Amino acid sequence: MNQKGFATLEIILMVMVVGILATMAVPQFEKVTAQANTAKVQSDLAAINSAVAIYQMEKGTVPSYENLINANATYFENGAPQAPTGKIYIDGAITDAGTTGYSVTADGKATFAGKTAEHFTAKSSN
Image 1 (tube, rainbow, N blue to C red):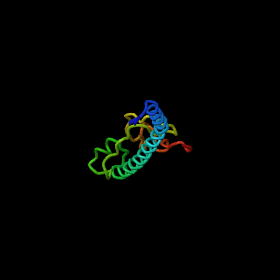
Image 2 (image 1 turned 180 degrees about the vertical axis):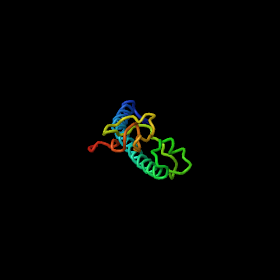
Image 3 (image 1 turned 30 degrees about the vertical axis):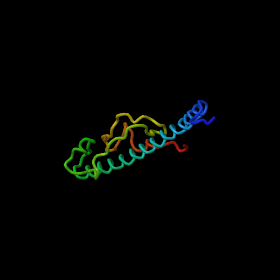
Image 4 (image 1 turned 90 degrees about the horizontal axis):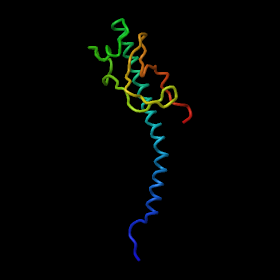
C-alpha cells in the first residue's frame, strides 16, 4: 500500500518538538529585546544630558524636558528621543518600560522612569 502524508503520531511529535524549541527561544528573545531597549535608553539619556548642558550654557537655567523639545534652537540632531516600549533592564532586572517617558531633574540630570543612566544595566551574567 502506497501511503502519502503524515501519520497522526508524526504530527503530534512535530508539534511537541516545535513547542519545546519555542519555549527555549522566547526567554532569549525577551532578554535580547530588553538589552536593545536598555541600550537605547542609555544613548537617549546621554543625548538629553548633552542637550541640557547646551541649554544651560545658552540660557543659564536648567530646562525641563518639555522646554528642550519645544525650544526654538535644535538640541537634538534627529529629533527628540522617543521612549522605548516593552521590556528593559532596570537595576539588573527585566522590567516593563510601560508608558514612562524621559524627564530632566531640577539639578539637570536626564531620567527615564525616574531613574538616571547608571540604573540601566543588564545583569553581568546572562
